[in-house]
Image (cartoon, rainbow, N blue to C red; front, side):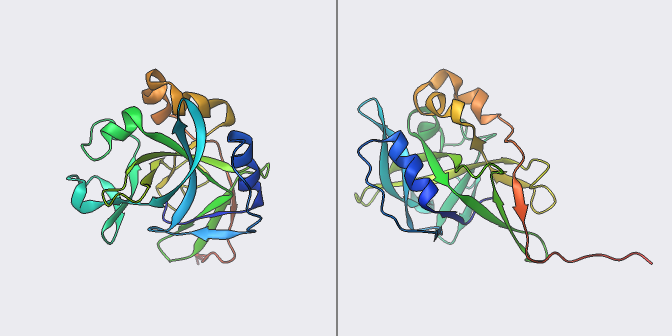
Length: 202
């Protein structure tokens, strides 16, 4: 599951790289929570475009409970079933997006927070799905999740589906590659944890 991530100036630089019309905001580090607005990359007129959308599909318009939710929102979709579930399948086929982040947070069963990011300092490219907002105000997005890799598994069994730089064009533009990319296993990440409870054996 992914329920919070953060962005910084490195994300702004990446957004500018993907969409020359995007104007960086010099906002520094900023946490993004469900129901908040975030900059994502989608397709507009056959080109990658930065759009500002709200995080979370509305449950009452979804008709499907196979996603991770917060209150009245569904914020994550399982990559394994995104092409099958009524809530996500149309978006998985034709409304895919990228959710750039400097890193994301996850909590273990002891409620201890861990921060995950790339070891090279580059932003993460999380695979997402988007749809028009039923209220007519812009759009909404969810983040796809998959089984945790070796770096995330000690903290949580699920993680965002993080794509590599060489995959983003296929994710946005090539419908024939979607099934393969949904099965992609993300690369290991750096983990930072201020405090981790230790178990002592006597």
